[in-house]
Image (tube, rainbow over all chains, first blue to last red; front, side):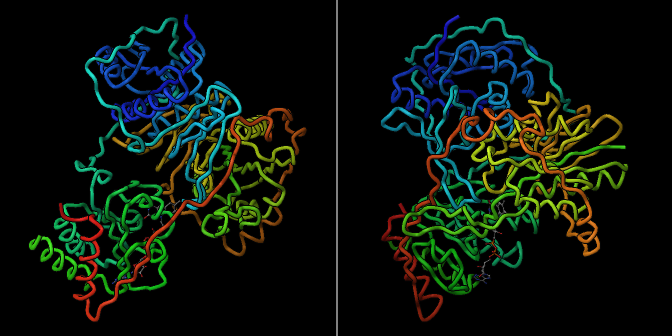
Length: 325
Length: 264
Ligand SMILES: Cc1cc2nc3c(=O)[nH]c(=O)nc-3n(C[C@H](O)[C@H](O)[C@H](O)COP(=O)(O)OP(=O)(O)OC[C@H]3O[C@@H](n4cnc5c(N)ncnc54)[C@H](O)[C@@H]3O)c2cc1C
């Protein structure tokens, strides 16, 4: 059995796995080490080949019919044994709800640390890994270092770019040996798919955000119109989903984190948990009737006034401008 | 008779944090504290199960001695007894060390049917301690429950993942982490608050729960904090004024075109 050390990546989410490979490649070249992907499942050879194309220098497969569907204990036991056999120095795991549980328990079994939901991942001049994450409800970024290895980190979706696919990439694909898969301690008795929005708000160039300043769900048509003119999408604050039940998703710390070219906050106060999700926007516009709303301190352009007047007027003005250019 | 333990963290009240604007350092030292929001949901759920099936609810906290005040609130909500595991050597414990302390304390407190935790704490939001604790105790775990049902020795919970919602079942003893959607935590009545002052808060030091000093605090932790800084927020803050909404809108539209963020 070979001890690879190096950097390992794993996510049960295929897109996220590619993003982990993207960040993993960058870190592997900085640390002058190798990048390995773990693939768990049944009949997964094709996936392994694809990962080589996306930058994995090595893929270790655990192929077992008991791993056909994701279940925590079987997956956890396989990953624990892989880690014990190959001794990676750093393990990047995808921050889905499944992945976060997996990472926390992997760290527990190995008696090591885990930094979840990393927004920043850098190497300092001493070669230490610096893991940065948002804490205190969006009020702060904490930077942490590990005292022991393996270092386990989880990474959210769309935080880092996936690497480019190269047909010519070379990598070794091997089957793991001697992995005992533990049975699941819980039973899934029912599953209902959730409808996931087809267009991803994270990918929109322009987002028009609406908050509690909108009195009725129908009033969102004025934001829809503005978004349409700008070729963008509409986003919401959490109370519109959770309290008013108008929508099922929201932008912010506990929702989607976005980084559009332009974010227009309409009737949004700018509470820190919301701002945590829009911080990386290039330009932020606030339309609010309260000159003391916190969003005013966080915006590039501010219009104080009634959104029911300003937003339609902005649509008219933009239409004119865009028609003349 | 069911026995439920609820892990309750005394968290920093993040809505009241202050930042030193010169250094961007976040001032956590004297920040007000409260029971972490989702832990209240866990407490509420435990109390509801007790009200239905009979039994007892214990809250368990690892934290400084001043956490006693927050524990009174847990007792006022309806917990029967509170355990505070507190020792100066616990300072700077990470999730590895904290879950170890909790596991040892829980083994000492005795048998249970369920342990409930919040999905994460409002201040550090790492969602680590619950899962780590379940693994240390070797019991089934269901995370992110938004509905829970205990019947005999089986617990059923509904939860939402990114792509589906699941109904999960496990045999007790089990650990469940709960989300905000599961319930609306009660606000204790004056009567309940008065009654709570007579309930017991058990205070244990490390030695009382057989906690090894080398496994806690900074030396027992796997990660170390380098710094905590407020995120940079440098914005132009240009207020656009017009005589009419139309004039304001036109000025704004021009500014946005100049920024190059609209049109192609
Ligand atoms: C743990 C936790 C996580 C959270 N996560 C998130 C999150 O991810 N995302 C999120 O959004 N929130 C989140 N929240 C909630 C957050 O704290 C705020 O409650 C929420 O963002 C406020 O939404 P809002 O701005 O729409 O409403 P409000 O704060 O009520 O603001 C409404 C604003 O509209 C303005 N207004 C009203 N009428 C008009 C009008 N006619 N024209 C112009 N302006 C008008 C008002 O002046 C006010 O500023 C979280 C909270 C907690 C505790």
